[in-house]
Length: 246
Ligand SMILES: NC(=O)c1ccc[n+]([C@@H]2O[C@H](COP(=O)([O-])OP(=O)(O)OC[C@H]3O[C@@H](n4cnc5c(N)ncnc54)[C@H](OP(=O)(O)O)[C@@H]3O)[C@@H](O)[C@H]2O)c1
Image (cartoon, rainbow, N blue to C red; front, side):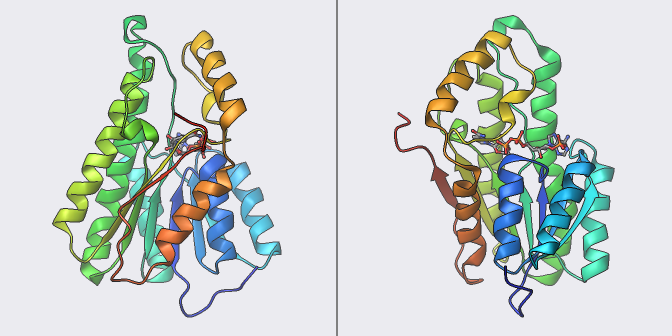
């Protein structure tokens, strides 16, 4: 693993305790960036930070709940105070409890909106003013193929991801000095299907995912590619799906 170089960036990653966020932390630390990792499971974050440091990387962690604006502000402001700038914010935290609308699982709908959509907005609210003041920055929002198509049992999840794609485009249009990237994975190996949703739906989706899913590192590589581009090159949308996914 490389140590920090003059081109090292200060990169904040939400939802870094598992799956795509964890893989992205590994990839970007290996690329020589300083990664600041946030999630609720701090034991997982601490173990990852220790591992990255042993490998020669530079990493920190902080407890983070993206549904709470004060928590996101503390995460972003803390990194800004420690390092004097924030180069990249990766809004990755997400949940996907799937069910049909007629099941009326309103608490889970609200939770998806709170984490997937409000969480990304909280990140933008906290980081954008700091990036604008510097005249530079990069916000990466993790979308999904669910930002491009709707499937039964995923209406609310898709709605949150369509919304993340829409707000990313608005963010890009309004801020010519800020790079904005949406990275949209298809089935990817992670812990996303471990929590919530209708158990029957979850079992069916898990079976499909188990046979098709790509490694989280494949999505991390796409994020790494976007981050590595020169300041005047803005990679706006990347869709990374299993080859066999229809
Ligand atoms: N896996 C796929 O097939 C797939 C496909 C398309 C898009 N995605 C998207 O990829 C992103 C990452 O998901 P993943 O697949 O890597 O699933 P994952 O392994 O379950 O990771 C989700 C991450 O989000 C964090 N998180 C959840 N609620 C949070 C909260 N309130 N505050 C802070 N962090 C929170 C979790 O950490 P804690 O629980 O420790 O807080 C965890 O680190 C999500 O946005 C997901 O929608 C995944």
